Image (tube, rainbow, N blue to C red):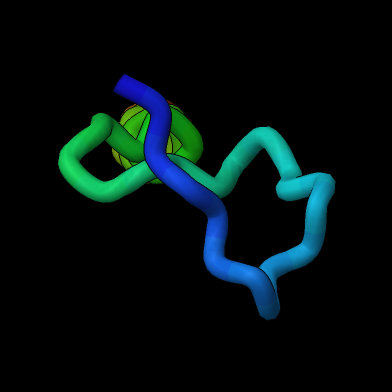
Length: 50
C-alpha cells in the first residue's frame, strides 16, 4: 500500500523524516546517545573527585 505524497511536499524528503505510525530512529538514537553521555560525564565526575 503506497501513500500519496502531498502535492505541496518536496519530491525528495530527507531520510530522517518518517511516515506516521513508524518509529523515529533519529530520535531514539539521539535519546540513547544523550543518556550514555550524561551517565559517562557523571561517572567521570565521580572518579575525578573520589
